[in-house]
Image 1 (tube, rainbow, N blue to C red):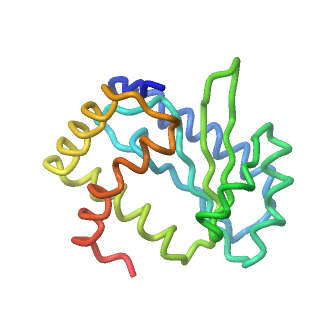
Image 2: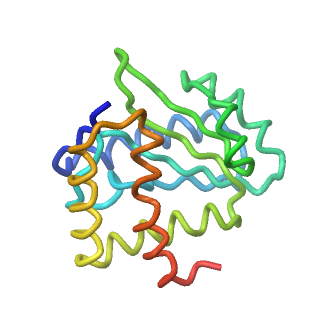
Length: 168
């Protein structure tokens, strides 16, 4: 499987806002925080054209949010909880093309904080952003078993950046 990296698209934040409004209608919870994460959330960062959405909730009962998100047409992947039990993962496809991923976690969790910290660093640090983009293009030239294998290949870089950040 090849990973398709495309130039930054100004439509990505608009698509995120549309999705966020749909989620807010479905999840009736005043304490929900919905953030645009991943490369599509960073202006001038080339990316896979998939909107990554981070939903932070105050409840420890993550499973109560599964049905409202599935009712929006998202597919829930329970198997991913084996590796990351503190997260619920969903994806949305249109015409067999991935459009969005949802990562549902507790809003004050380490998972939540580190993803926002990495996004914010990419937004504010052009040197890190360019290095990350270069890595993504380099990795996109390889053949991957699946998208998870590609994501794992970026982990060393991401962790090295996270070590510099304060998010606890």
